[in-house]
Image 1 (cartoon, rainbow, N blue to C red):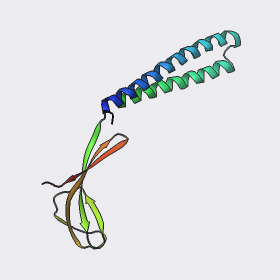
Image 2: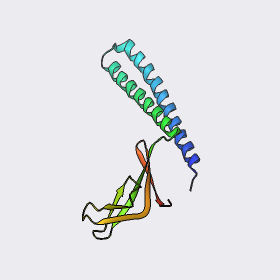
Image 3: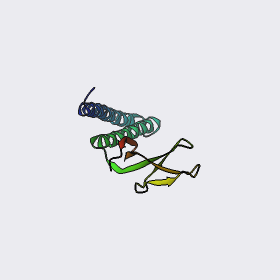
Image 4: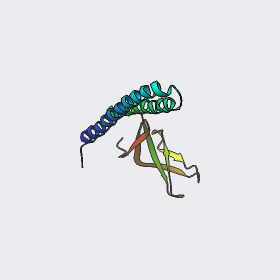
Length: 137
């Protein structure tokens, strides 16, 4: 198994390689656009090069955004859900409130108790990481 730092370095290397390739394409397209403008004017070929240059610029801005997101992961909030189990209807119910020892089952209205575990979600931008903990307190 590779270390996470090695994987991040590889991803950043791929991003840098793609950025340099896109920048060189941008220079070539700009040069071709200027050469064609001298011969054809600002008609069809000039406009096609303009669209191609715009696509490359958008690609560069997307790569820059990707590089920024790879630099650090921002945890937006931590969410804990406490589990309750109903033996009558075999359903597991999760609540955010950890204080009540007993609650009523929303399906069969039987009084149910905590099952001793909670799930903690660290909600991140565009992804979720979840981890199950045994209830210690």
